[in-house]
Image 1: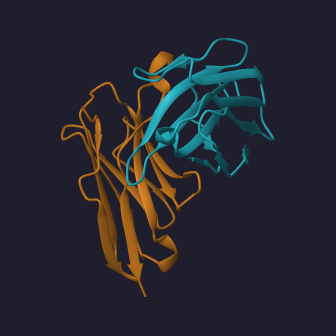
Image 2 (image 1 turned 60 degrees about the vertical axis):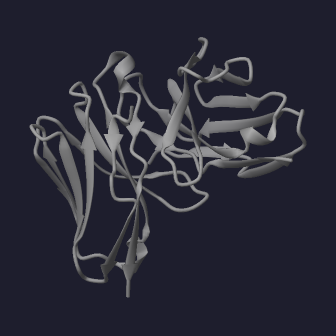
Length: 114
Length: 116
């Protein structure tokens, strides 16, 4: 049973346009969410996170939106650049105790075309 | 910033042999380290959580006798794949956090293991 779902395995966007990557979760105990970027044969790199007490967090070109009632979050990248092409993983965690381990989605391959 | 070094980056071994993968936090003390495994086009699956000085906690379905984890110091954790078989071929990634329950996860660069 997958608790973190990224239903789009791939997304293709034109350079300069907005990229929107989606993530859904089922575990209501999750209260912290992270996005990671990953290139082939490399470890994930942290991008941005959001706590459940917020509904939006912005960092430069990256914005994460959280809709707790829908158990849905999304990562917006604007403007998209060819260097953003990578696999993006959504991850979720509960706070403290044994719930701090991350649960990952399967990832979405983003391709930004010049 | 926090840096995690993972070695080797890739290794090829013969079936039946053991392989050790090291994960080091270079500029911080990692009280907790995590080991993940990733199959092609799949998610990162947590294998085990290790806390310095104590036994690792393995996820359901992960054989603790096959995947030996040692976290002897605050900067080093090792994963040993014992009696490796071709089905153990995968991408193994470690991550480290500065404090238990903290969210400052830093990932290593991963190890591509191929068992022939």
